[in-house]
Image 1 (cartoon, rainbow, N blue to C red):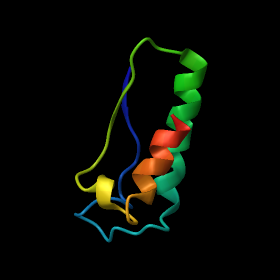
Image 2 (image 1 turned 180 degrees about the vertical axis):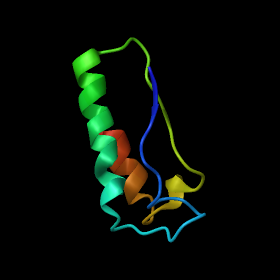
Image 3 (image 1 turned 120 degrees about the vertical axis):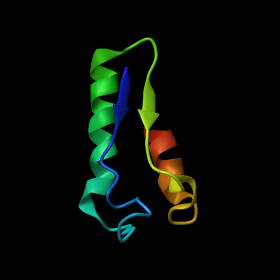
Length: 65
């Protein structure tokens, strides 16, 4: 399974707003992956998400999965 969550709040092309409500939509991907239980899952996202909010964002995503 391959998916990408909305990235407007994370993107360098935009305002990069940590409080953008769309940043939490990755949780829907977590739900779908749990429901479908694919043998492999790949999540794509934007450049520099690893540095967003002092790495707290990527840690939250990792922990959810």
